[in-house]
Every structure is written in structure tokens, then in C-alpha cells.
Length: 149
Image (cartoon, rainbow, N blue to C red; front, side, top):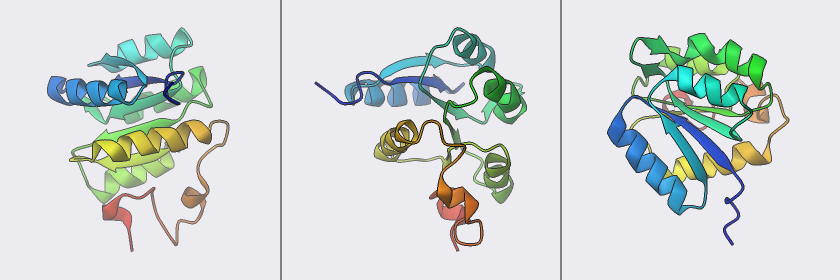
């Protein structure tokens, strides 16, 4: 039995090809995946108590997930949020840190990295954020290459 079979990933990305590839990979890894192309469906699922971890693109149509993170945190304060983005700017990484997301992963990304990050996120559930965020002088945000010294 796969260790991930109990973990439900809520995947939000408006790029159908990204959704398909990531959902298929994570499903093959044993995760249960619910995928959507918009933030509003993601919020509905969270309100219904679904999901163990959120993996979301920053931009979905006219919506920016950073505008919705306070609502996500209100609905589910302990759910880990992993941000994926084609915008690899320092500003996006800093917004991720300020929003207290679990991890920021720039596109293009390695699928194994997403799976490993989900595993770490679910193991750290209940913590406000990983210790590496607290040591900003050592590592700004997660393992993102753009934010490394």
C-alpha cells in the first residue's frame, strides 16, 4: 500500500496541461488529487473540509492566489499551501514568504520536487511554517534557486 494514499492534494492551475501532468504524476505516486482551474472551486472544496494540502499556481485567469490566501487560512488555518509559479521573480518569492505558504516552487519544476514537498508539508501539518522560513538570513524561501545566497 502506498504511503500517500490517504493524502488528498487540491491542485489549482489554469493551465490544463500542467494540471493534467501534475495530477497524473501525483495520482501515480498514490495521492488522491482534486484539480481545478480556478480559485473559487478551490475555496469551495476547502470550505467543505476537503484536502490535506493545496498546490496552487499564482495566476489563474484574472485571479491571483495571494489575494485568496487570507480566506484559505481563515477556512483551514493548518492546511499547507505550496505555490507554483512561472513568475520566478524575487517579488513572488517574497509574497510567498509574507503569506506564510509552506513552499514556493518556480516553474519549470521537477515533479519529484513537488511530491517531496507535499510529503514534507503533510509531515509538518500543524506547524505555522517550516523553520527555514524563520532563518531569513540563511535561506529566504524554501529551496527556490532564485532565493538562494
